[in-house]
Length: 215
Image (cartoon, one colour):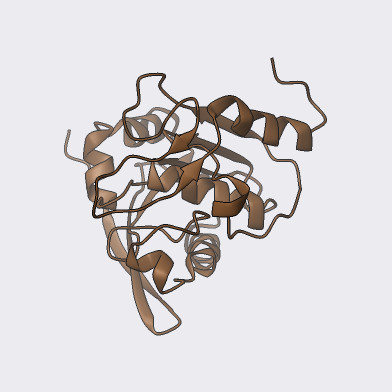
């Protein structure tokens, strides 16, 4: 099946930020909203292709969700890793406002249920999920980060709301970039991301906020 997507943009400060999204036929009233975030050097169209339209198929099967694939600034997100040397971080791009304005866009245009807004992301996109969870914990119903671990304290420049959220973390033990046991993120000599906690420490951070024991 060919999934026809809509392309649109919003002005965030002095920058025009764009995104693509998929709306299933026979969309139900007050639909859910799902954000899917690409990794470093990626695009919304690429992660839609890399996930083999799985989220679009999910929307089709249930007719109750719109799927959004936003584009990072110069293919990156300004997330929590202070040492990251890509432009989105160096220029302190306002991605938080970008997501707030996108949600407003879908509330106005499609009357989405603002209590059922979800976000997932891979790698750099997973780190953006962490930032959204830390700084805007009430904005989304559930958060899911893939191939990402929280930056260590000295590498973190996000505000800490310390509010519990519903968080899923999916990491691979053999990941050559994001170390499962923690340490320096390995993305090559020209790129820098700094050190991250282990997957267990990452999960313990979120579980402690919810007064849960992670085992």
